[in-house]
Image 1 (cartoon, rainbow, N blue to C red):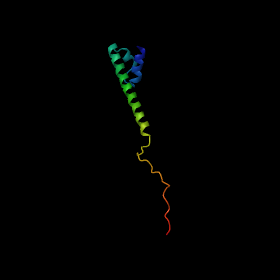
Image 2: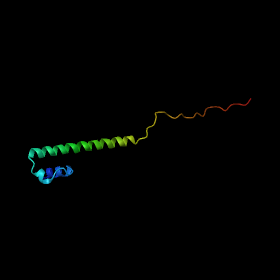
Image 3: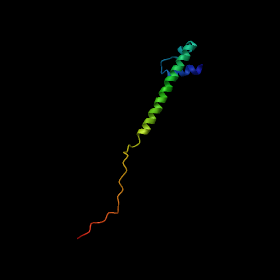
Image 4: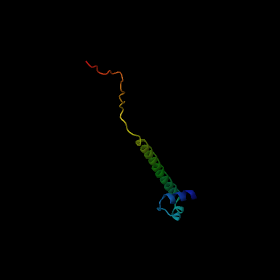
Length: 80
């Protein structure tokens, strides 16, 4: 119970006071706690996926063109 109250007050970012949360009906406190948990879980997932995208975009995009290898079998022109 006290952990729930702490999480609501701390993660509520100033929107809740300890006395207010302590005096809430149990069903409302549970609803508020679960709503905050879902919000921060989604936010963490979005940050994680954003970091993955940023890490992937750091790779240099290169075209799929293979460099042409020089051939050394050409003969020099002959003088007449």
